[in-house]
Length: 185
Image (cartoon, rainbow, N blue to C red; front, top):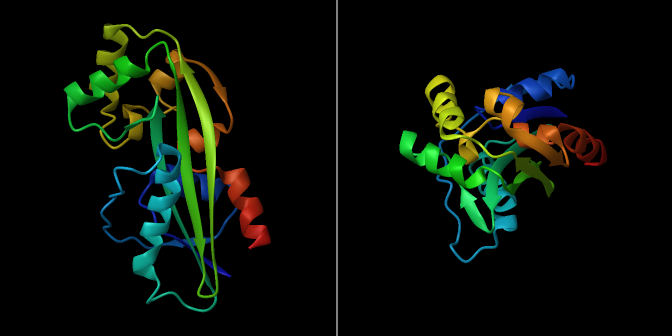
């Protein structure tokens, strides 16, 4: 099947290329809204499904659409993309010296069926000084990243004590699990 990745994320695109997948990129602007009563662990798979819906009218018989969404959760609080520098600083102070979960929901869609799966990774940060946080925000401008950080950037290198689960999930796509799900799809 022809694989369609519905994502502008350079990290997702890189991971799929590195895994040897041939794919085409198609994107649409989609509101990432979810019910306020939804469990935080259900948000990422829900949003990945919502992202697939607008493509259904144009999807061809031989195409497999991949949509995904990644969220960061600290004690049931979803930490989205920061609005500004102050928001990023506040978020990173919350994550400092604590463990949070990263959930990625992935939706595989063809004209005949749909499969949704979720990957969860727990990430523990060392205590982060105000100076480390401010320096990271100024240099890396993490305004397009859930939780205000990217694991592969400086803050991930110096601030993460341990992870439990898939590193690539935190990067934005649990690629090993995705490959297995595509194989069975």
